[in-house]
Image 1: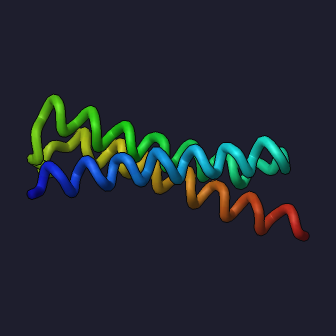
Image 2 (image 1 turned 180 degrees about the vertical axis):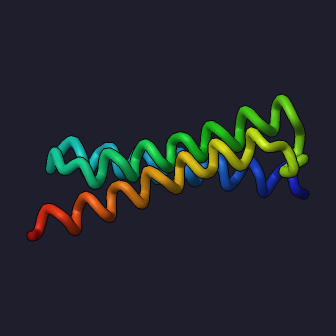
Length: 85
């Protein structure tokens, strides 16, 4: 069951990343590019780590890559708010 959920989360993350890429192509707003990169990194991360490590989320690499993905979201939000000023 956990493998199924892990695959579903990976697929959903990659699909969300593709949608954000589509929005970036039409608007050329970096906000969408950062979000697309974040979701794609998270989706590929879940897929690759499941193949290599399994479902052991205690691996430090898992959290470092997740930190990068969430950091991209923070950079996108901060950058978008600074543009308005």
